[in-house]
Length: 197
Ligand SMILES: *[C@@H]1O[C@H](CO)[C@@H](O)[C@H](O)[C@H]1NC(C)=O
Ligand SMILES: *[C@@H]1O[C@H](CO)[C@@H](O)[C@H](O)[C@H]1NC(C)=O
Ligand SMILES: *[C@@H]1O[C@H](CO)[C@@H](O)[C@H](O)[C@H]1NC(C)=O
Ligand SMILES: *[C@@H]1O[C@H](CO)[C@@H](O)[C@H](O)[C@H]1NC(C)=O
Ligand SMILES: *[C@@H]1O[C@H](CO)[C@@H](O)[C@H](O)[C@H]1NC(C)=O
Image (cartoon, rainbow, N blue to C red):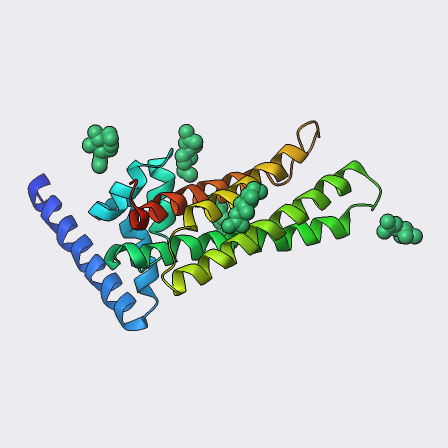
């Protein structure tokens, strides 16, 4: 019968072998960078840039995990991080806009729910146009209005949420909070270029 120590070593050898195979398979299958980055994001220490940025937002955890959802984040500079954040906010807002279109189709056109959703449709239109403008600014290295544009997109999400103030069913709460969180990150990063950080 094996002693506990020996069993322990057998177990560790077994698990490191397993880990080795998983990593090897992952690397060869080329699925991995994203999967490994995602797994790493929960365990690795964020870069100094990311922790500096996220420390200036209202929710450090949200900020780090949002930024680390993009595989470029661990190796990027401030300029690259701005593309990550604004791109993410843009995709997020676009996904919500698609959802609003679906919800509008499902609700009868005269109901209160329909009117609230219609308000949100216009809000998200504004948010998306602000984020598109920001993306254009970034591409041309024009930084002065980035923070304002992020603020405008965030205000649009807030306005959408306010439309449901007295409604029993608020289908966009998580989306609105998510976009506002992403816009807050964008605003903080914008200040890296214009001072006031
Ligand atoms: C976060 O900010 C606080 C106050 O500005 C500072 O004391 C702290 O060291 C910062 N933490 C990190 C990880 O940057
Ligand atoms: C911060 O974000 C995390 C992850 O998204 C969330 O679980 C948590 O509730 C948020 N905290 C606050 C105070 O909003
Ligand atoms: C609402 O729906 C009805 C029936 O589907 C349609 O006749 C009417 O034109 C619609 N009203 C608006 C404002 O779209
Ligand atoms: C942001 O919103 C404010 C208030 O609605 C508006 O005056 C301003 O022009 C907007 N900024 C940009 C750059 O579109
Ligand atoms: C948008 O952001 C929310 C909050 O972070 C997240 O749960 C959701 O998956 C994001 N959606 C997209 C399409 O990025």
